[in-house]
Image 1 (tube, rainbow, N blue to C red):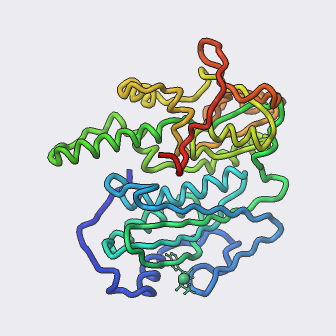
Image 2: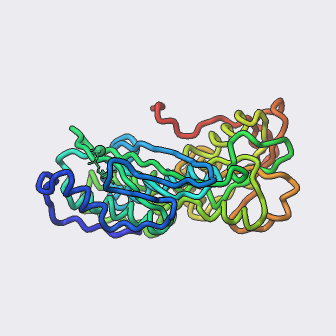
Image 3: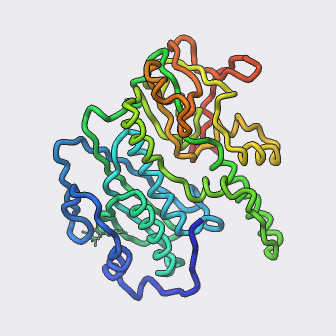
Length: 348
Ligand code: ADP
Ligand code: MG
């Protein structure tokens, strides 16, 4: 995981707005020739050439989307970039630029923003993305971060949510449910800590699922892999709210139904053991967990041989006619309708 260093406290007022922006942004690299002008003028300039431009944005609010009592600021910066890149990759496009806007209250010293930007920069360097601008302002309470990601792809490569056809296979990358369980572990430890601050938790056995929650990785490799395999998905979406709700988005936009097989859901052994410990059903976690940032897509059945046995990909079901509904086929071979129990920001 990422290291945190936070001993000194320099007031933001000391630098002034321009000093602050310069201080936070001066070490960023530029990777793409499409970036003509980044930070420093009234607006950034991009050269989109003959490709189409993909734009996506996310707003993260302290206390609603993140909890700084267990989310180190460096991880937060990294994750805030990931959630946006994930949306670009879900369009089968290449992410090239991000803008970063923040609002902070005077409770945050300069060192806190340095940590946040260290995470943002690590994400930009790892994923080869240019940070081209943003906005900085104050808030009366807490921290807000809004990131916009910009990607590009030739028109023919872009994959929408609405192209799934009956008989297509439903495929998911990686494994699912870990991020949600990591959050459960962190929430539990936070409560233990509040009762007994002396208690030092041993989180080693949860390392993978905590990492899934605190340092998710967007699947930049999957569009690349599919291109190499010469597979163009018929539809694609990233798993931010939970597999179940993402499948429902694909089915409703494509006007189809589907069957997802319980015994095909890809689960890490740590997800299974932690589900046993918490006495929760691993299928529920896989379907409704959310925040895994894996890609869910459909491919023509003719492409099955090209992806068969690939360690990054699991076929979890197939698309049906709309009239057949959206169903989970259980291990006992029963069909039950899937519900969008994926995380909803307006729910309790
Ligand atoms: P303006 O007053 O025209 O909005 P700013 O002073 O806010 O300009 O921004 C100056 C430059 O710094 C712009 O290029 C802007 O995109 C960039 N910038 C401002 N805030 C941030 C930030 N938090 N992160 C990255 N770049 C920023
Ligand atoms: Mg501004």
